[in-house]
Length: 198
Image 1 (cartoon, rainbow, N blue to C red):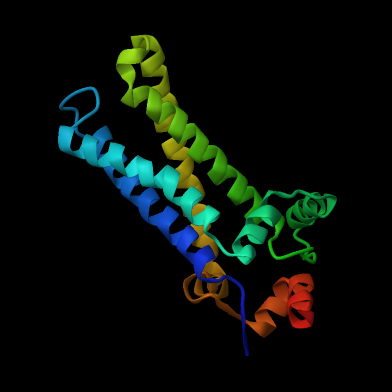
Image 2 (cartoon, rainbow, N blue to C red):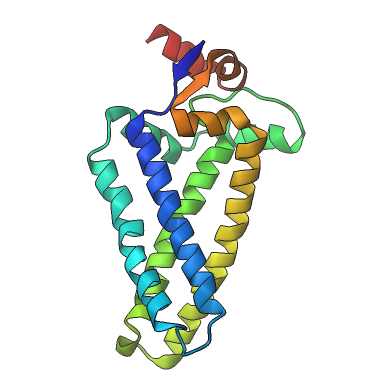
């Protein structure tokens, strides 16, 4: 039996963000390795810069038009409780512990890191884009920060994909929306019981 875990707006939010992230990552790497100018190939630079707009704005637009379920998911991902710290402690001890809600503390941490990366990319990218407004040394510092954030995001992405493949049921539900009820009961028992009652 399958139960709904992510509705269409949640999946649209996830995959639209992923699409533009990959677009920016590929064009950013291309810019890094094409030293035609300080910012690399002009065409790739244009493609990279203009992809940053939907990367920032599309999640906001989707969130504003999202379902109550998606908004509740985001609210829960941003709420940290004592149970979340306990989950991390038990993880490091290699012990299994119940997840208090729909998301475990690792998923909440991933969400927080993604938000911080978006803010960091946006601020440093704006400074690099509008470089004529700032001193050369400040722009160069932001280049370094922007590139460092890209490296961090690659590491985060690698971990995210590895865990998604390892827990293939999670990957299926962010694609199709539904999750196996037995799997949900084992990994997210409190959320499962709440869904069954609702």
